[in-house]
Length: 355
Image (cartoon, rainbow, N blue to C red; front, side, top):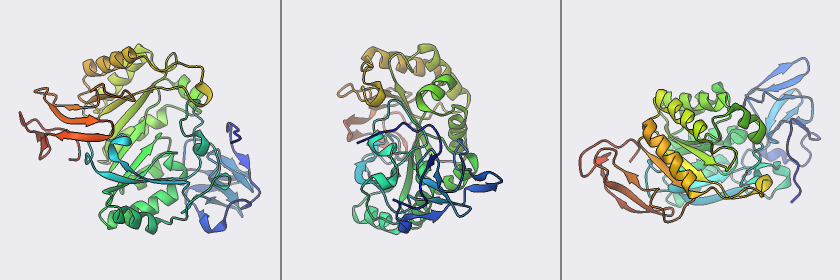
């Protein structure tokens, strides 16, 4: 599949290639003398008539901003919630996962670049309006709907309307995100979210700019806003050898998290595997993951996991007081759960999460 790394807003001949059936006006824009300013994410793309934003999913037309990803996901699957990863949220439950084309970052290590770096007109999609997403989740016995795989901020309008219906039907809403979203839309959405996993890609502003195509501060703001809103939160940090695995940077990140009240927020250090533009990089050494885990634990983070390492036992939930294994995992499956009424069965310590 051909690929062009996005560098900013691009051309799109009106709705050409985008079925009007899946287009809705977005509330997240303002009119300016030089065009339409998108206010959904920190890029603040200024779009002239017929242009799409860096995300490839928002289009300026007739003096308005439209989403072209409303009800046309390119992917829909049933996943274990552990795959997101969310380890402290309804363990062993299933979630109905949906994603559309597009992303508002351009990560050199993207695992899903075939769909995240494409516009919806380039991909085969599924006709699945918000009400149908909720019905599918219910019919398949899913406890939640996950907005995932690509970046849900770029299909915000679709996610928000689906989340509202899901909430009314007793289905939970999960946002698996890079956290690159402006505060106003995030605060409005947070009222319908039950849990989120935010990918804190690095604690270096330079890395965010050079490797991921964004800025660090908006992601940190997202973490704090979700916490303040009472959304259950977990954080993933991918360790790329030579890029994001510096011990000093990891220590600064963990110190920041603890100082901001995230000591009980599960932190997932994820192992990198060569992909996309980083095929010449090596797999993260196991010792690097162990070092990161030690740094986080010493900093005061109570629940630290290392992912993409099969059979390591480092994805089990351990009581921070008596050190008993409470939730034992094998891959994405839960084999043992010793948490009773939100507490350790052995010593009674409260375990942070939604159990």
